[in-house]
Image (cartoon, rainbow, N blue to C red; front, side, top):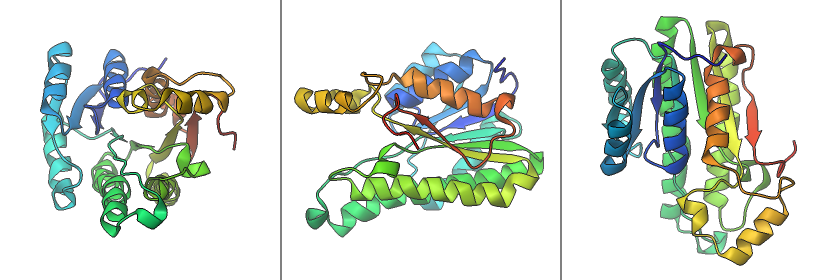
Length: 245
């Protein structure tokens, strides 16, 4: 049974579709949750739906404030930090020859550098506990590449390699660091995709459909639970068979 009762969990990007589902799934299993995001109205909606969760507005692009954020979030949870789900991220698409340095740097800074810093300062908390789980949300395109997303794919592939290195460094300290690599999931972002292009995407998915945010949330629950205690430095693919490593 995936029981997270009494476990303190930070979830970034909680104001988005996948983040919402992760909050709901982990809350159902008894976790003490600190939900973070940039859209205060979405965080307020979560707070009104789940009275026991705590929320904290934070923009992970503020890299110099990340250590303070982890301190504040842990204090809000009034205890140890057992797990962090690094779900927040952005896209800023363009063809490579048209992509500005600013477009490249912004995506790398937010998706990769901030995930590193969130992991780093979480590990410092977890070392005191002598245990912990870090779950980094990457993407199928970090494995396959994608047109117009050289910045995004680089950032997501970087998260995978970074997570393996962190897992090697801290496995003996009973800290598990893994990734989840979603494929195309039904969210506000995929709703904007042209229907013809969406049909092409679905034609490449063996399951012949887009995934649901709950599919990702279920994977997060597994990696956050004690059932995954002997899994470290791995990437769990949630893409309907679109990418078979």
